[in-house]
Image (cartoon, rainbow, N blue to C red; front, side, top):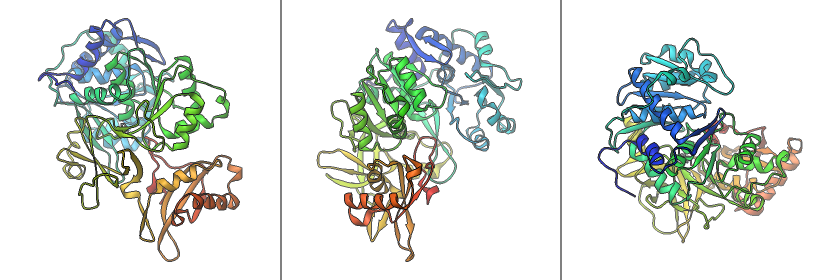
Length: 515
Ligand code: 3SK
């Protein structure tokens, strides 16, 4: 990786490199409102920076972004970074009460919110003691502005060029909220250098992103995964990104992939499985697609294999985290082992540790720790939880992994999801994968459940592909199916059929709710 100068601003780097390459007339983004060139984006970023300065935002002050995926997100995010302010993109899927914590905790001075989302944020915004202005952005579906200024009008009046703040690689650039299994979301503080490093280490060296790529990310920009996929990476390589403001249903994603001839698709396992199961699009082929990425939860082997067989291109399964900003362990083109998460991304060091925190060598199973140049500086004003997660150069991921003799890693579940059955560790993920291999199963989640003797055994919650087939006969068949494939003590003693599984906004199964 190239060393960065003492004075470095990530927004300037991501925008100016494309103008310097002569890509001003190239389409950088296509959103619901149309295409935007690199030159057009550069001007919009500067106008956004100027309008935030005009609203009184100063270096290091936070700007909360509750924005759907349109070019406005990119312009305000980079405009804020350019003037040294700190954008805080937040999940747009939250219930109204959750925004109160985010506005207070971040002490944001300005809120930029999509009109369609304003009804969910208006009360929290009115109560925030820190907010001095709310700006409302257009969304494709439209919505109220409650008399707040419209971003479109403010951008038109703002100056088309703004002077960048003299930031350095280690200055705070943006925050991303991360929710754990307990407690309120905490803000991971990311630095100017981190955007550039994720682009170099993952998008360049692993994904091999190129200027002629057209990228679609089903993960929204407010997620760390989506932010890299659809903002940092396309801009770092002069590619084109397609933004979807709506929910990424199989129909919406198929439409965008076909219409825009996307070459890179960034999805999550649930979506890949739903796309494969979508009868209405069974005839669709995607000849332009050269590679897809998957993260958020481990990709079941059969999903990757069926995708490859149908579309003729691979899904690179990887794992990242909000704290590490993007993927640090991944399969790579030409070396895909479905069912594993592949090898460490060069530039990151991985460690498996035992229950006492001692590193394990060679083939082993343990808690996964990671070290690399994109680790968050810490959680904002949360010393205790920072100390629990960040240990010197190491970040605890909270995941358990097995490493084989060749160094490939296989997901074994969250460290705290593991079950001890008859004194032996059972990975719920292994049982879920076995269940998911049955053709009648769409999805499954496994948790520990106490039996009549108060001993914990695996219990499965199953979404049947055909809800009419759910019942005792199928439950018995699934139990036999798992017993045939795994050590006998691992089979689920109970099977409960459900219409859907509870999930986080990032698509992770919320096992605590099932428990
Ligand atoms: O969930 C993941 O694996 C992930 C990947 C990239 C960036 C962020 C996250 C949480």
